[in-house]
Image 1 (tube, rainbow, N blue to C red):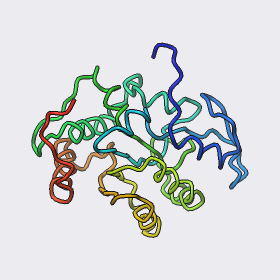
Image 2: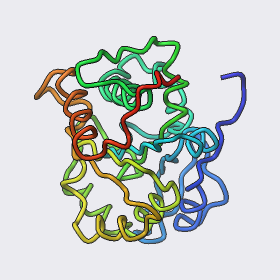
Image 3: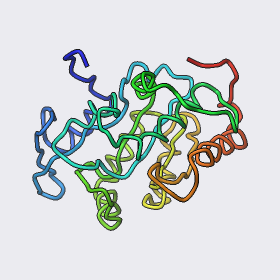
Length: 231
């Protein structure tokens, strides 16, 4: 990564505000002033805020929690292929995002080259419902409790990013309707929400997962569909 520090996401100030820290680097811990428990907290948001903000369709993925702790999550998002099991979650994130950003139709294949993945990731934003480290299997009770405790910060983070399209990837079930209503009310233009399986799901094939999201977009949000070939 050329030794460069990752660009801080636009919503970084929100983490600073409610965690009482001046910075959050790899391996650092933070005092969560709402629960009083000192633990590692992941930075997340737009991988490259300048690129993300200039996109015609600003895509935000809402995932559950970081898998692990004591690593620089934002730096990892720049190129998830550094982890040998990256495809379990980010394989579909990359394929779906690539399909939307390049204007692919339903049933068109979305198989970007591995070398393209950092570029695709730089064009999107990803946040976790729960900012503290988790494990391979999420604890649903903890996810719900964390979101309820930090609902104001969750809403503010989304408002700061101002996405056009939010993909709740196995997470919409944890978000109360009141929060969704507030997200819509806070957006300058209508924010479009898609309820999708978690990318690490095994219920349907990858093609069905991608096509299902593209079908929803073409049906409900035709203004997002374009055929320019993208980049």
